[in-house]
Length: 295
View 1 (spheres, rainbow, N blue to C red):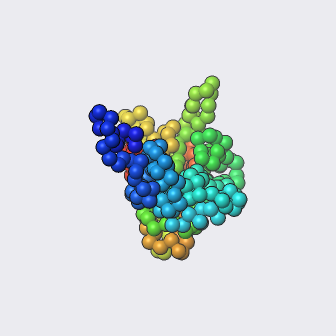
View 2: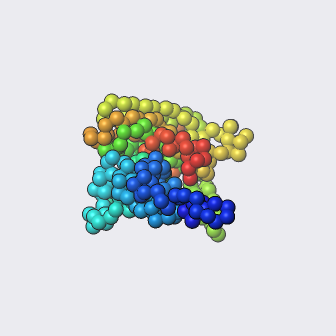
View 3: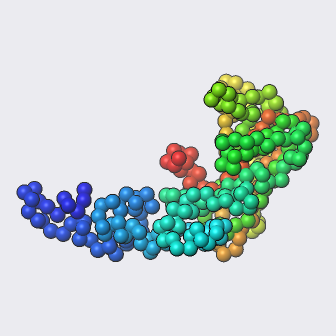
């Protein structure tokens, strides 16, 4: 495929206009309906496609309506003289804020806004007492550190995020891990010595928003009997536990989202749990990832 071939007949005679004759403005109109990866692939065809693929008018439509709020977290010299295409590329990588404990980015295919919040940005009951909790440095976390619970009776983790989310439906989920993991001779190993209490009663996950939306659910983090029959699949793996969804219809007002996971029944202790982060992701993207369409 290409301009050099599209305007020739079988015997080499000129047939008529080809891809190279399409006005750049027309190509730009088509690009408005394509995804960023598709645009970048087509930019290789010829000069008109390449020019349209760099047009600010095209990439302005691919950026979220509140992209200036994301740029707010960066020094102005990083984006001051960039094209809209380069701004899109810049924001598709995580932008850290709140002392590096939160990050926001746009999805490379859809341009939708995503956010993650480190455990370090959350209120964790007993976190200051090393008899209960420890911080573990690891490359398995986006923030390079997770909170590890050795043992406690009152388990409660609370967090909050306030941001001008673009209109969308968002899913909030906690990223948790049963067992303490480490590397030994290059291999990942997990220690479940302190992992207990999570199969007795479920944890409760809750969220609420500043405009009155609420969601909650309960789930057992460690289903011992079922796990033993199925390879104990909940232990030794990072699992995203969905708290619920909320809807944003107006991005002019910042939406405050509060979320928590807790198990405060003091009839038994629990331990051996890693808390990494909370993700706030457009629900459509979460569903595509679950089905394997996104990495």
